[in-house]
Image 1 (tube, helix red, strand yellow):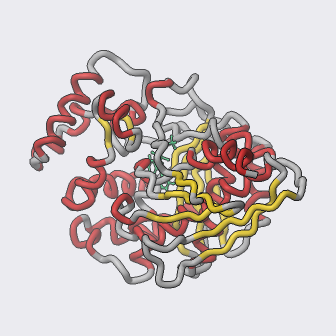
Image 2: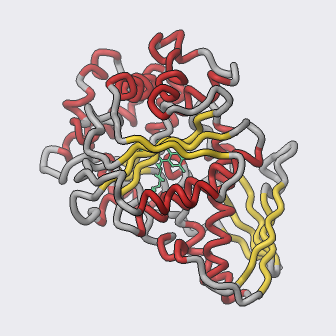
Length: 362
Ligand SMILES: Cc1cc2nc3c(=O)[nH]c(=O)nc-3n(C[C@H](O)[C@H](O)[C@H](O)COP(=O)(O)O)c2cc1C
């Protein structure tokens, strides 16, 4: 069993997480995996707590998939009442049952975030029927797909990204996890390499641009006038919100029936399965949670600040609702874009993972 667990761990730890902050630690105790959360590493966003629970759903799914490749079944127990960092949030008990490997497990190690321009694709592609099939088996969550890119949505994405630089706490978190030098990337093995933001192939001038951002981050110097030149520093390839997303095959939105933790866990499990499925079928994928991070807490009456800073963000929920056509009860928690890749993903843009996140208990 221990050898099987050791083989599973690298695939589990490749799971995606916001800003690649890697807030999960695993303790292996006999045939059990206990998952702990480090809140200090997971502070980003206006509704961090609910997004963390969605993240826990992702790790639960990753464990189940990796276990299936070893013929192991998993019994999952969640401990989400009064959660804290000292106690595990999830316990996965593994049992040898000789079950069949889930084909999606093969994508765990190749899955990635592709923020480049895409080469289109079509909602008529049979992969989207498979995606819908995934959704039909999930409870407490819905998936909505569209191949329309309304201007109001693009305006929301831009406004939500502008907010990152308007609210110092969010900006600090975002810049804290952006890695501008190769040395930093290799020594931390977390965060997002600046090359992962490039929308087009790397050119010589991207390098000095990345250094300028590195300097601004070191000095924590982000004057308002400089943000107007954002695209000349980071260029359109590096802007968090490019001018258009009409290069995709589809945009998707996962909604939950409520803010209960079982619905959030279900959303995380579904999000990871769809991500893996699309990558496995050759589609690129980028999570886009900046607008949902505003719409979700606003709908619950938890966070009004964005609209007081950028008024159009007060419309975030209705813009998403008009675009994806979900009902008034649903809460949008996870948006994504997907499409055909423009070419092989550059190795240097790939995010690394820390290898100190597992402890073997006696
Ligand atoms: C819940 C969640 C939300 C995310 N939101 C965004 C987002 O809004 N924009 C983005 O470009 N990437 C987003 N990501 C992708 C992460 O930044 C990415 O998974 C992480 O940096 C690791 O890189 P990798 O996916 O290539 O392994 C999100 C990932 C998760 C799990």
